[in-house]
Structure formats: C-alpha cells, structure tokens
Image (cartoon, rainbow, N blue to C red; front, side, top):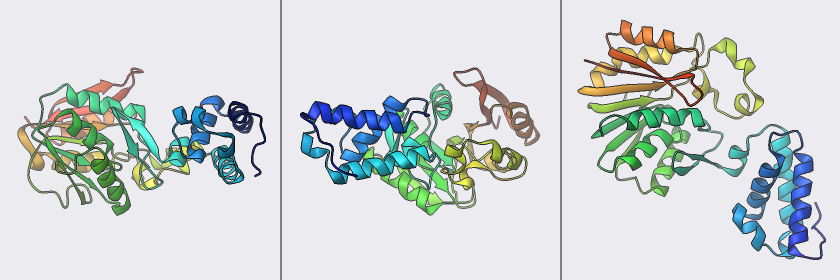
Length: 285
C-alpha cells in the first residue's frame, strides 16, 4: 500500500482513520477499532496518533495497517491483533495460545475479593494468568500458583507476572488440573473450559477461530472439569479455604449439584453485572 499524501499530519491521520472506518464498517464500533489498529500499525498508543508526522504514514506503515484491517475483517479479534487485553486493573499480554479474558471473568475476581485475604492461591487453568495476577496485586501478602496444560500459555502468564512485578509471588507449573499441585491453599479459583461440544458451532467466529479450543471446551456436556475440581478440591483447600469457579450462565444448577454431590458445603451461585449466573463458590466445611 502506498504512503498517504496529505498537506498536514492532521489530514493524514484523518485520511487513515477514514480508510479504516470504511474497511470496518460492518463492525460494532469501526471508529474505535480503526484508531486502535492504526496506532498498532504505527507502533504508538492511541494518544500517540496525534504526535505522528506526515512521514510516519509511509508505505511500510500503511501496508501494515492494510494487513491488520484485512485480519480484522476476517474475524480476528482486535485484542489478538494488538496482543493485549485490559482486564481488571491491568493490561495483559495475550495471543492465540490463551483464552481472551472477558469482562464476565472479572466477576470471579470481584467475588473473590469480597472474602478474607488468603495466604496462598491456586488458579487452575491459568491461561494468561489474569485471574491469579489480578488477585495477587490486590492482596500484596499473598502468593499463588497457576497451572495449565499449555506450556505456551504458561510462558505468557510468566511474562505477565514479570510485567506486573509479581514474579516473586507467582509460580506457574504444567499440570493437568491437580496432578502436579502440592500443598494446600486458602483460595482455589478457576475459569475452566465449560462449553459443551454441541454448543461449539454456535460460537462467534472471533471465539471459535481464535481462542484455543482446549480453553473453550472439554467436550461432552462441558461439565467434566467441574467434576474433577469438586472431587479433589478438599485435598488442597485449607479448613477455611474457598473454592470459586466461573460457569456458563445456564450451568448454575448443574455445577451446584456437582459440588453438593462431592460433599462441598456453603454452595452459592453469584451473578455477573447483567444478572446472569457466573460464579459458583463453596467451602469444605
């Protein structure tokens, strides 16, 4: 793609943003996305766009911008293109190797923070580490362990811990749920894969084509991880420890029943900001 020809930097910015908005016209917010993607192509944040000179809209930048716009039109999420997602109070690196953190998951963080500060936290299926690291940042005396089956995901979680200055309080291990976990924890949290196999085809292309399927579905009815977590949580929780999991909005009754059947008590279902069931919590006594 050729460089933009303009009389001023402001005019060049206007032309580039108009081009992006036209390309993204079918998206929900083409103006916002055009600014984000142009900034990414130019190597600046959104505020830095107004500081660009005419020469910054050269062929290299505009070709990169055109490629990014094509990827977005093809359904790749903006967050996966720019490589980060803002979650809770921080910006987290993400990639195709981890689940894209969504606002619904902040319900789990908020609910956890309503309870007593733990000394030790376990995050099962940590992905980018966004849940564990958000909690550790809120509780400066706590330490935590995040586990995942994906070594690539764990690499990203470690980089996020480093970026937030939490490497001395967060350990990340390769583990199939509890298999490589040792010790006891005051809080166990998890956003496990919970989409039933039959529901996968109904997902948006942004999710289906760009989030790792390992983080989306366990197959079957989508409840297998909850059965594993509920069955073994008592081995790893302290006497006053809490277990908190994110669920699909229709899974409250099923997950609650699984927890009760495993002998867990004080089982409660908590809503997200839209009033839908989003978190199930329990204790061992």
